[in-house]
Length: 550
Image (tube, rainbow, N blue to C red; front, side, top):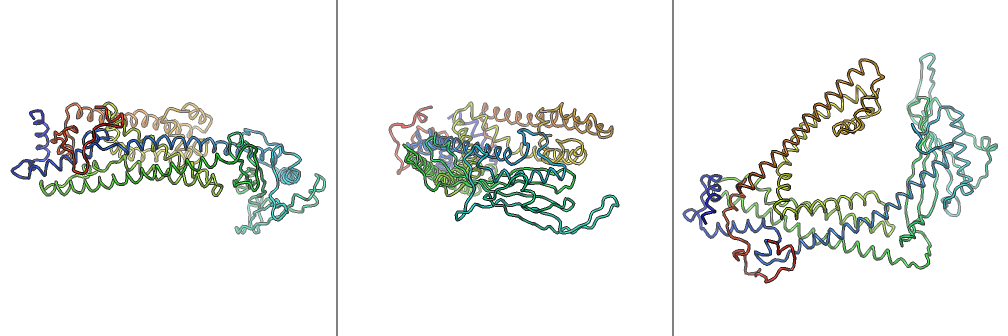
């Protein structure tokens, strides 16, 4: 017991008028509560040696990691085929409906003359009508009651107005009117009759936009190679001619909204759809595993909250002192909260995945975010098990101890960063593409902090006016010097200082809180048998290899 005297002395120094001795408290009550707290902070292997409890939660988490990872990979491969199919169809639509379109066109697709605008609109109409004779894809018109859904051409314009730039006068009504024309694909048009058959005109002085809406259907056959049933797709295409700026440049773009559903009648030789049932069964197993983990970890979080309330009451009653919030939060296991969040996201994502597989839902993006975030949190949670080993644990303790100071430091640095963002946006925005919008400024400055694309940023400002050039130099040099040489150095020093502090405490075995000082006085080892309860007798063998590690 001589080796415990330094720790006891340290505990008494931190609890100046609180002496855990028989003359002030029942020694048995104090030791039992101290032992209970120490058991709470044991890892699964130590708990097994102390009470013989099988590490069911640990084994469940390992199985769950494998299940969630397999589920994510399966969904990712299916999602990859869907996204590739959508992107390739969107590229095909641009080539089919935009006259003279080229891939990787610099500056976007734009028109500058009235003749080009009319020519491109009639080109789209003719391409749509003769689509099935042109395309190499399996495209068809959307039909309702046996009749094809028409192509719809809508123009938006100011209600009325008179603009005379020469005399510097204008009279405008800002109310926006909309006029739409429907064109059925059954109509046969040639280049000579199309301009006379459809009578419409554009008043470019009042024109805001021309939007062309059309719907096409197709089937994604590539999934057959992966033993999955093909899906049917509805492409709701919108071709936009944007003239809101009235700058003499009309931007043209194509947007594609996709609806995915189960085909009405299908037959694939040698396939009965069993793969889909296996995937549904597997997703159900994942939901069951995550639900079990959610219940167990929620129960552990509740137990931790109850224990910290008892410790606060106990400490206040016997020491007449209030436990600090940092000590209280030590009892609340943040890893369990992380697991609860990941399980909730995984269950929601799995339910959405089942809905997508059964064609009731098409929220691929939402499902990807839920499953991706859940898998990321699950793998981050693996760090907790690495913390059972001393060499890895010091890194985890450093991250946890440095986190509050890092957040405070980042809040202060963010004020300086936002100041530079607003300044660069308003001053350099008119002269530099990277500073044109506020979100681009934030991305550009963050890239500069990481040493990316520095020379190109400086180079683009060489040909500007002398005042702008001088300001850009002062702006960029001061920002780079401040954040790279000062802010980042302080950030690294903050973490390094925390690491040295934690390392010092681990080497000297000095408790750093009232809670740890109180627990440190318990010298009972897990194998001592002092942690046994009547309802939890010790077991004779260990089923998990991890529990056998001392």
